[in-house]
Amino acid sequence: MISIQEALDKREGKVKLHGWVYRERKSKQIVFIVLRDSSNIVQCIVKKDIVSEAEWNIAEKILIESAVEIEGEIKEDSRAPTGFEVNVKKLNLISMAEPFPINKDQSTEFLADNRHLWLRSRKMTAIMKVRSTIFGAIHGFFRGKGFYEYQSPMFQSIQCEGGSTLFKLNYFGSEVFLAQTWQLYAEPAIFALEKIYTLAPSFRAEKSKTSRHLTEYWHAEMEVAWEGFLELQDYAEDLIKFVFKKVLEVNKEELKILERDVSKLEPVIKKPFVRMTYTEALDILKKKNKMDVKWGKDLRTVEEDELVKNYDVPLIVTCYPKEVKAFYMKENPDNPKTVLGFDLLAPEGYGEIIGASEREVDLEKLKSKLEAEGEDLENYGFYLDTRKYGSVQHAGFGMGVERLISWICGLDNIKDAIAFPRTPLRYKP
Ligand code: 4AD
Ligand code: MG
Image (cartoon, rainbow, N blue to C red; front, top):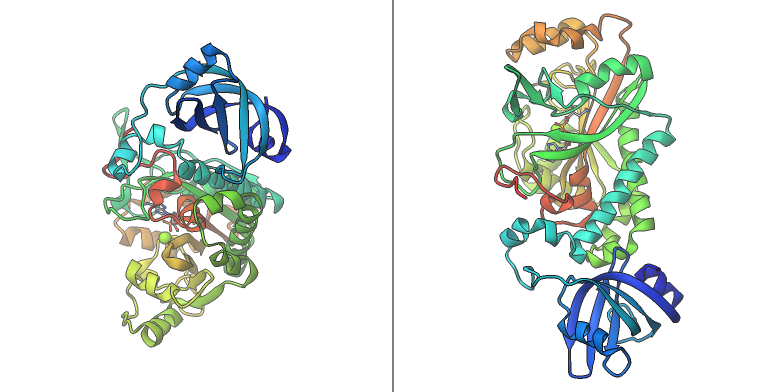
C-alpha cells in the first residue's frame, strides 16, 4: 500500500491505494471515483469490462466517503484533477458510507454543526497540515535556541490579563480560573531554567464575536531571564520569520489549495519588521491615515487595521501608555508614562499576533499596580516572591497560534484555524 502522493510521484505502473471516495460519477460502462487520502486526491476509473461482476456492483452503488482499497495502473492524464488516472483492476470495499450530509453550497452554520465531517474537506485538511507545520516550527525554533519546554497549570488561582475575560470554575467549593496565560506561573521557573517556552491552550471568556477571538486558543509563550526589551523584539521577529520559512518550504501545495497569495508572505521573511513607538504610531495614523487618537488611549482594532495598511511586514509597536497595559509590564525608565511592552501587528489586517513585555522587577511598583486594580495582594504572594529571592531582569511574550495560522493561510475567520473552534455561541460538536 502506498499513499496517493507516492503513486502520483511514481507516475506510472502498478499501484495499491486505500482511501475515501471524494467524488463519484457513474455511467453505464464506467464509474469515475476521485479517491482521497491524507496526502492528495487521484482519479480512478472502474470499467465494467475489466473488473469482476461483484466489484462492478460495488462501484455502481458506491457513495461519497465510502472507504475502499484499489489496485490498478497509474498513468498521466492531463484531464484528471491531479494530472493522473488509475485504471482500476481490483476494487475492495472497506465500508460503504451512508449518504454524506455535506454537499455543495452549504451554509457556514451547517458546516459548523457538521464540523467533524467537514474536517475531511480539502480546505480544512490543508489548514490542519499548515497548522501541524507551524506547531513543529515553534518547537523547533525555541529548542534550537536552547529553551526548555515547560508547562504551567490550567487551573489557576490568580488572574493575569484582566478579570473580565476569566472563566471561573467551582473547584470543590473554591473559585479558580482557567489559564489566560502561563505567565505568572512561568516567571517563577526562569530562576531554575532561565529560558523556557510552552505551547498550550489559553482560555478567554471573550464575549465579543469577532473574526479574531476564540474562547479557547493555543498560546505559544516564552520567558527568558537576563534579557530585556530589545532581545525580546528580536525573538519575536526571528520566531515569525522561522515559522514562515518552514511553511513556505513544506506547505506550497496547501497554500495553493487555500489560494493564498504567497507574494504577500515573502516580505515577512525577506524584510526587517518595522519597529515604532506607540507615540510614533499615533503620528503616522494622523499623517497617513487621517485618524486622530488621543495620547493615552489604547489602539482599537480599526486603528491597528489602518496603521498596518501602510506596510507589507509586521509592525512592532512599543512603549504603550502604562494605563492601557497589564500590571506586570516594566515601567520605561526613559518615559515613566509608558511601559517596555510591545504588540506585534500582522499586515493585511490579521491583527495583534504577539503581546510582549519586559517584566517589572520593582516589588513596590508591582504591589501598587495590583492594588490599584483592586487585587488582594495576599493571593499574589507566590508571584511576588519571584522579586524577593534573586530577582533578575526578564522578559517574555505570548503569541496567538490561531491568529498566526489565519494570517499565514489567509483565512477570513479564526474559527477555521482550529479543528473544533470554541466561541461564545459555539461549543458543539
Ligand atoms: O496580549 P495577551 O493577552 O498577552 C498575554 O497573555 C501575556 N501574558 C503573554 C506573555 O507575555 N506571556 O495575549 C497574547 C496573544 C495575543 O497577542 C493574541 O495573539 C492571542 O494571544 N490572543 C488570542 N487569540 C485568540 N483568541 C483570543 N481570545 C485571544 N486573546 C489573545
Ligand atoms: Mg495583548
